[in-house]
Structure formats: structure tokens, C-alpha cells
Length: 186
Image 1 (cartoon, rainbow, N blue to C red):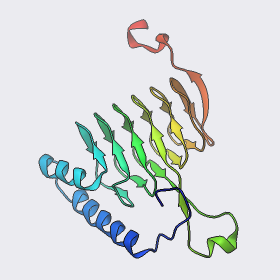
Image 2: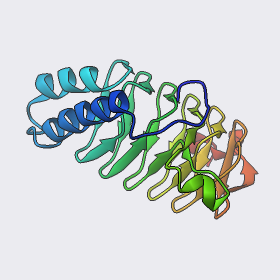
Image 3: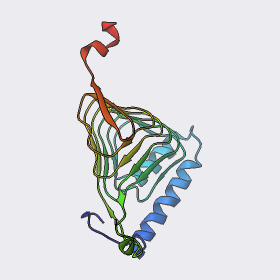
Image 4: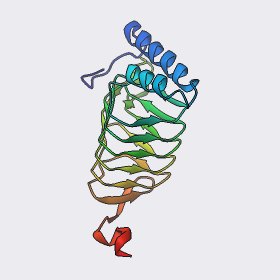
């Protein structure tokens, strides 16, 4: 799985690791938002890395948790799904809108191979200072560059460069972010 090769998600070790993540996220999702210390401890138990000032609004779901690496000042709104069969890496100062999905698994193209119950996974990398709107889908193998914005409802199927606004299905760059976008320049 970690090497990006085809594997069986029904493997006993992977099944047990998935159940561990599901148990921990269920506990997190049912912990009071005011129980800040307990929630932070649970996030650190779930995630591969959690920087400073990390907030995941409940509920959120993940497959394994240990393949999610979050930088400082991270915020994910409600109902986010992280299918982290491959690493999902977030830089610092990332905002994620509600109902957003990060999907690293890929199933075989040929139906005979799909019937075998195998899959592979490709990583997702999100740079620093990225804002991902609500109800966005990001597929495995994608990188999003620093400072970029992904518009709500987008489906990101290929890399997005730094310093751009990208929207749509499939997600496409519509323009660069410039100094004219600063509030002070208006």
C-alpha cells in the first residue's frame, strides 16, 4: 500500500488498523467541542502528524489516520473525508471547507481486476496557505501549490500550480492571484 502498488484492503493488518482509526474518530466525533485538550490528544493519536493550532470539526472520517500529515494553523470544517491509503500532506495555514473529500485509493480499470478486490493509492499534497472551498473532491496523485484557492464544488483531478484560483469539474485554473487581490489595494 505504502509503495503505491496494488494491495488488498481486506488484509487482516490493514483491516485492524482501519478499525483502530474508526474507533478513534468515533470517539473524537463524539467528544464535546469544549473538550479542547482531549480532542487534541485524540487528533495526535489519529494523525501521522498534527502541527500547532489544528482544528478538525466533527464529524470527520479517515481510513487509517497515520497517513495524514497536517502543518500548523490547519482548519477543516464539518464532514470531511480523508481516504488516506497513501499519504495526504497539508502545509501550514490551510483552510478546508465542509463536505470535502481527499481520495487516495484507485481501483483497477479492468472489471476482472476490480473483482479481485484490490486497489492502489496515490498521495495528495497540499501546499502552504491553501484555501479549499466546500464540497471539493481531490483525487490521489494530485498536488496543489502554495497560496492557491480551490473553488467550492470543484473536482481536482490533476496538479494545480501555486498562486492561482482554480474551479470546476474538472478543476481548472481561472486566474493568478496578484497584489491587486490584497484588501489594502482596493
